[in-house]
Image (tube, rainbow, N blue to C red; front, side):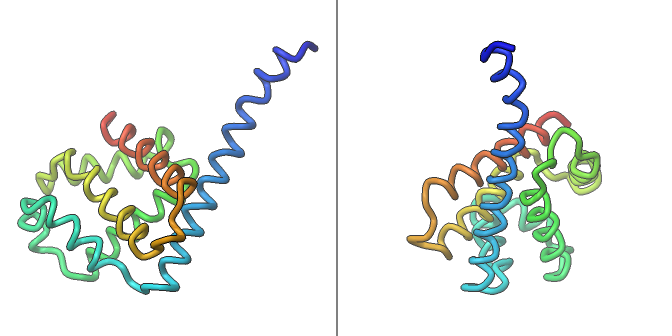
Length: 149
C-alpha cells in the first residue's frame, strides 16, 4: 500500500482522536469551572437574557430547577463527542422548543455563547486557544445540526 492510501485510511481515525481530545478538553474546562464557581446557571442565564430579552418572556414559566436541567442537558450535548448528526434527542428537543414554545432558532447560538463565555470568564487566564477551539468547534457542530432541523 502506498502512503497516499494509508493517509486516506488514517483520516477517519484522526478525526476520532481529534473529537475525543476536544471532548476531553471541554469536560476538563467544565470541571475546573465547577471547582472555581460551583453552579454557573444564574450567570449563564443572565448573559443569555441580556442578549435575548424575548427569551426571558418565553421562559417566564420556567423555575430555576427547569433552567438548571436545560443547562445540564446542553452541557451533556457539548460533552458528547457523537452529538450531532446521529442525535435524535437533539432534533426532538429543537422541534419541541420551536413548535411548542415558540423558541427562535436564533436563540441557540447566543445560549451556547453565554455558556461558553461564562466558562471562559470563570477560568480567566486558564482559558486559552485550545479551549476556545474545542468549544467553538463543538458549538459550530451543534448549531449545524440545529439548523438542519
